[in-house]
Image (cartoon, rainbow, N blue to C red; front, side):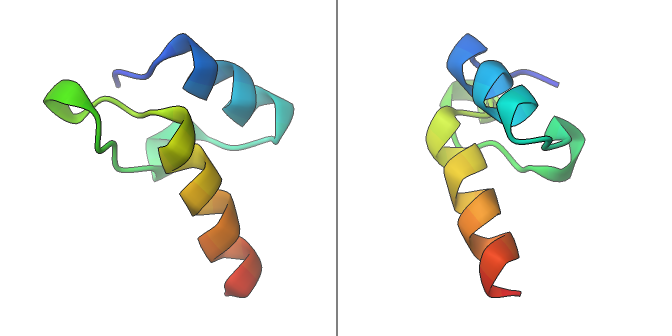
Amino acid sequence: MNATQAARDFARENGVDLNEITGTGSGGSITKPDVEKYLADKDQG
């Protein structure tokens, strides 16, 4: 799994498993906005 350092840090701070997120960054990498969207979607569900 490829993720930016900011995404990794933010995910760790929020208890998010990056394996649950589909990345939208270059080459499919997970970005901080991907993690933010995941959390927002999770809160709505």
